[in-house]
Length: 86
Ligand SMILES: [Zn+2]
Image (cartoon, rainbow, N blue to C red; front, side, top):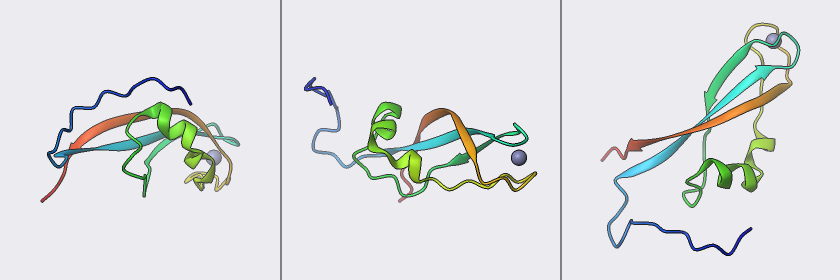
């Protein structure tokens, strides 16, 4: 972890947007690409790097919808900011 200051502009307001992480995966067996959204990501994680450093990716379970191979290779992570539903 670096000691670099993180600039955030949340101020005192509640967040109106939250990050949603999408994992891009390839099946280890049939190489079929797939994607899924991460569930239960702690709120302090807001970037792809933080997600990778958190170790949460290693705990994701995977099952290929085509060949039922349980081994997936993560090929990318995308973050998108979505409006908090009130
Ligand atoms: Zn497969």
